[in-house]
Length: 76
Length: 347
Image (cartoon, rainbow over all chains, first blue to last red; front, side):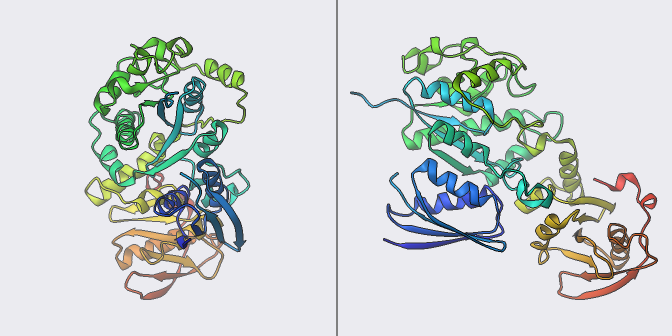
């Protein structure tokens, strides 16, 4: 299982979601993706996108203006 | 048992697309949503910038719709390809720089390409005959089907009974009797249908979901094209048109003035791309200078910047200017009075 990182800081929603989606399309089921973002909207949008598309959010951390979301790629 | 037919729904996040997808889902069709991001969408990033908006719920309405329906949603970046739609609309603009008909043709065309690639059977939209003055008229709905290439594979569940049957209806994939015949600008039938499905709290954007329908935004975009002498834009340009106060004192440059803390923070991200200035003697905005500015232009910009700082009533305000070559200079200026700034400088 791969552990991949994606930096979408300074991007505004929905771009963090779009970039996450594009990255996930390249990954395998079970891979872990860590997304670094700064738009507060990503806290809601990336987990919502994961829920509707069958991926699992492992944890969300927020420190000052920076948000880190870790997710596991689910079945297509 | 045969595989269920598969449809892709264009999901804007509004009520009509929610209902259209629901009507088809309820017929046992496998539905997935597709949402296009043009760069001009009102929701999304706009709520992230201004501090005063921080308390608002930061919901992406298209994702909310997908969750309500229990369907997958694919959000597609069409920023680059969409430029040609905005710059050269075959069918022209609406009241502002909104190329609604070309936009709809383009999006349905993209959806058609998507279903071909993914092996889906047809496309759903939430269009209603007579709902919009440009793109949702009795005479323009067929234009969208024809020019997008979707033709008989484009189903409008909310107004299907006012239109000729499509292939999914003729083939029996979809039961035409369970589609609707909504028409006109009234929203009451949609609201009643939403209530019957138990949908509440759906998005009802007052001015549509696209900045290009906004008069002031379109004015700023037209000004940008005029100042550059050509009709082109980058994503950063159209983002910055949504932020701050824009003042053009001379044809060769304009000021983008942060109106509050959230906007100032957002503009800080552009400091390496623009000459910028800030007040040092008093609290004040961060100001980007867009264009080629001479020393005389910078002096004028500094006086305007001082006007929008808390030193507006002071005799002098200190300004720090950072130019793109990495140099900086300090200016001490008399703030311009509000009356001295002509109305037509404001974009």
